[in-house]
Length: 481
Image (cartoon, rainbow, N blue to C red; front, top):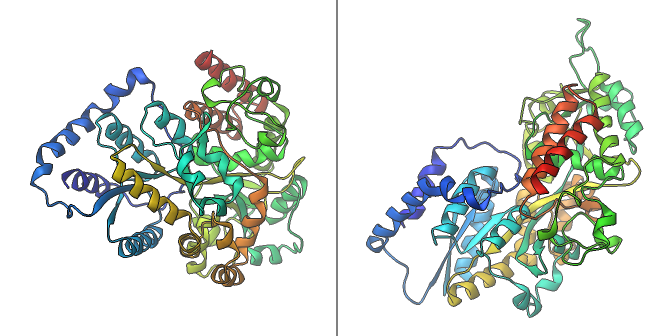
């Protein structure tokens, strides 16, 4: 189809960089939406005029489009193999998987397609886009289908939080991950470090010992840790474990207790606090709390005592320094395992050290089903059941490093053998129970942006943690009042 060719041509012009698979959705105010996407709509309209000239699948076959931004490219190949298997097993359904760009590149295309009535049948994307798509009326609610599906019961219930918004379920987990700390065992051994750090204080001491002048020029050429610099989602995603580990929250818990609705923030289900996404206001958002200040101060301390070095702006996911031995520790997730193993570099992983409690950021993507014809919606849910299945999740996890969302998959013989060869996987699996999800209400991008500004200002020593967070809170008050 012309639309598909247009999307491919746009994607081909982009650099194929293996960026982290978790960029947050960008929320656009309704009043600005049309102005932002008119150029893209023009291209879609051209596609509509010519679509009749294109060859169509046989009438007996239900054709589905899946938009995805899977990276790095080898992971995309794994997905295509799995899609091909589905098509071979379901002669009445044909799924076409289309790469439409990494992270933020997808958002304008998705919004243009929704407004132009040209949305795909299915979308692979981070959960933070949920509220925005629901408000646009684009998604098919899945509760009734999931209630009747035997496969749904096999999905890790801890991931349910990321699929729900305003009392309904709008997606299914496609793949999950979380943040840990990679380290170079050879550098630990050279520094005489035998125990992995389990607390913030131990992490700081280890980072100091790993910061060394190995060439004798009087300046450190090996640093204990790399911290991401920038205001983007990667920086926020990798800092949030320290907010949660320090006992912090993104919203005021006392406000939540007075509200009813769907769980969307962190692990509030543990305290019974439930907050509908549409009700988030300046009174709910609380960046200036003891845990947030402590987490930001900890990062600042690592930089100020020379134990940590900052990445290039917005490139904190790149592994060059880690691979070359200039950095001994780096924050990342299981999607990095394949790249590290192929590099033949020695590495290990340990959990995020404890502040006042254990904590990490849960990442990954979900599968969204858009409104379409009844036949396409039924076919799309058939594909969704395939994605949730033990067979799919096992092959996807082994091929990409993602953690299986299916509980049976985690205990399968094939995955057990994979874990035996990749013991680092067990570290990420052990952190699942401590994982916290980012908000999925439509204004999350504004919270992320303000957190990113506070983190950057603190790391560059332009502000104290409390002052930086207070300034960000003030901006959010102006937005959400």
